[in-house]
Length: 419
Picture (cartoon, rainbow, N blue to C red):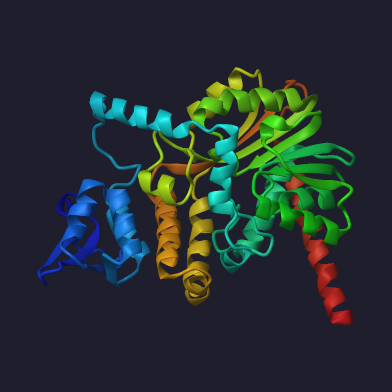
């Protein structure tokens, strides 16, 4: 299997009986890697179910990277078969396709009671864990890099400005934030655009933090947070924003999601959906991720998003594909995770750390070489709601960035004066 897969870069494998084999060819752009199998069962375990087997073997200590890093190993494996690779396309195997479709349908069922349990599995982990690898605002979604050299903090601030510009905000509007996380986006929109925001989440940990932040900022009367499923929200909103939540909806519920959003959205309203997406067609969630990281999670293809929203008569007024931004984001998270290994192992244990490392490295590789990207889809109900050219987006985004820079300058002056 390795002989077939490894083409670019050099991978040396040390087997449990001491035998050594080398695969691939040296490449100056790819760091060589040496891995060791701790027992005879691990290679068979990986060969049977590559992603699940490799992930569990790494977590359990059966697969050990002795030279290079786990990320280097994944780059050798996945980099040899990038999404953009050449060659003539062949029809998919119908039996394999049918089996994948059946598995996907069973796994995507996401009833309300199951949704909360799935969210808690990932987002109700220790606050300290997220503090160790996220930015200070805890933006746990793809950042926006106007320059790949920018810091994570700058890129996350620019992400918020990028999204706010697409919402075409003005003072006094009512905004719904579906999947509000720890409240950073809702608080930003209120501060920058003088709007009222309702943020909803299914994570009790996130809710506590978001409410505390609103109280500390003195805006709890204008930025409210509730433990609510999106299907339970009532009322009407001028703007709806959802960042990094759609991945948990599940394809059977896409039409329900968009229909409910349309019913909540004012006739002259604007909605911005920010989600991880597939550059190819519909597929399934890999077994390791579904088991250990995001149970019930599914990454949609663009065709699935658009076909579902069409049934709700929502007009896709703007579409942007962020191709490499999440790779840059994940690299920053991965580096910070490695730098805080001792603290994470103290919070949990070494096996948990290896699981988290495998998750971030695998996700990063899927955006570097695989079929993953991010989509930002702007929706309106009325075709006349927004200007007919995109010029307003750049103007609004530039204004928001200047405003944020002015805030930082004032904070810096205050620290020097009172600090």
